[in-house]
Image 1 (cartoon, helix red, strand yellow):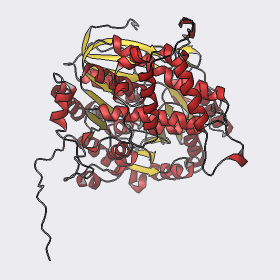
Image 2 (cartoon, one colour):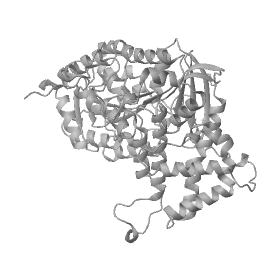
Image 3 (cartoon, helix red, strand yellow):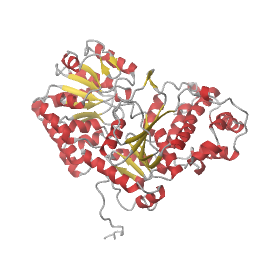
Image 4 (tube, one colour):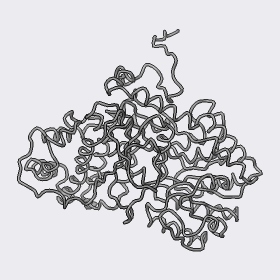
Length: 572
């Protein structure tokens, strides 16, 4: 594979990738690639931002071939060990106006929907008003830091507060410098808030060009889950000194930071896109202007996946496949427990895990050890990156009930699968469910993200009338998963056939790749030659009141042709 990055002085659309394409397969990376390949008339750039160049101690490798219309790719790391390159500290006073703006920013943090001060919306603030050296070494920065510490958390170690504040803010100056070097761009597009969304919003403020935001999961909520469960943030007050419901102030600092940069992204986005209705509601609850929100569901190549059904056994072998990364958020351990329970009723059942195994090697090892301890696996597999030391045929034909395949072509996996499953504790809109439907595979999934919508139908009455394409359970409930596995794999009851039929019909009517691509083609064409302000006037000519006088359009391709604003007369 050619690792040389393409470069260009200008692109039509710049996509911002936080820890995804082109290094990590699946999920958002697949969506980015699908978008670029499906819209060849546009030139794309990708700006990748990651923490460091290493994953589990190994240098990350490019995971994708580049499509021809990917004209520019650049890679940046926010927490790379570059302190040695920094100039020697010098005594400095710091810019008064700049630090006054930072104080106003911190005041805005106390308000749910407080706007970020205008001066902080432009890269000049970070490159001229308050440089990174000013933030690190000036007297005003030190005074500001000690004042906020004394006011907010004097009972936690100062050194913890100091390094937390530094690490929270350090990436902002890195991102501001990235904006200065980006090629000329007509539309900025981020697949999340967070650092990617901040970079897109800052680029848009600087160049006056349109900015789109498509959230796959809700970044702010996912970071809250990460922070509240993190074990690397250690300090807590002694229990007797804690107030009721008080939690770690350091964690609160991180959560508030991600809340506010999420709001910064929402305030600048011309279009705030989500994949399903539940995500749209969460966006609005987190501060997204309702009139800018829109739903564009994912789509899949239905025709190509339909072709795989010719290789399916009738009835299929009792194989349940989980397609996803082997990481804690996918809760692979609950899947393993569910297979153990189901095997008491279906002795020849198998659970296949298909997806990357290089993101959290410790978790992969724990999952294998659990399967071994439950007598579902005869030994521990070895992996080279995302490839097993065993061939596909060797894994498929061994006697294990839990099998880890690493990366595989899903067109080989799905025809062999009776059911697909997700045991995740968080999801956006999983493409794998739709891909399974198109290949004739029903799904049993936890009630996260859009899983219920995809299984039960939610777009309109006709979608709901199609029926159930599988089943939904609670999270971390192996008994419930196992019960549904057994029900569907008892083929004579007819439930599997009904679910297969519903899935095929739903994906054909609502989730074809062509529909998804046409929605984005329309948005791009509309904005391509406009400024942010010009597009704003076309998309939302006024800022809507809190209560809209008409029902919000839920899905872009189902548009309102007319609505009546005349108040209805009350009748006696």
